[in-house]
Image (cartoon, rainbow, N blue to C red; front, side):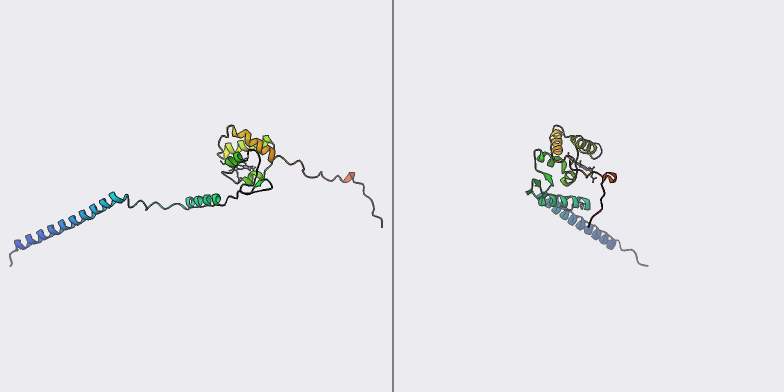
Length: 170
Ligand code: HEC
């Protein structure tokens, strides 16, 4: 039976230790290279941002489009981009009333000053419209002046009894 060769085993262990040392040393080199690079260039992972949600992308895109495509021309007293009448208070209304929805939604509606105030209160109560402060009077004046109820309503219903019927003669 052969006796175990302790010298050989010892060499083997030494070699393994040596390899481990080489391995650790190279890791240290890589790590310090990275740290130096990091120090010089800033966080190299900064561009690995969390991907944006689709909603975020869409909002940004639509905001860009809205800004880019806002039509600033005025035709027949109507600002084409917002659909709002250009009159006293227009800029204030534009700034406060076209943020959540288009100005066309405003222009489609008609109401008395009180009616407009009610709509504003409703938006403040339920839709997160902010307090308008002293701008409110300017806005209400503008709305009441430009989007008042139309005087020309429907014609009166026909009153069949009041009609004098006659026979057509040839
Ligand atoms: C904070 C967001 C916000 C702002 C700012 C805002 N609104 Fe609105 N408004 C809404 C929402 C939400 C609706 C409901 C939209 C819908 O039904 O599609 C609405 C609806 C309306 C309507 C339609 C009401 C109806 O009965 O159909 C009018 C008119 C209106 N707003 C006018 C205004 C005016 C005038 C201003 C400026 C003082 C204004 N809005 C500012 C959120 C807002």
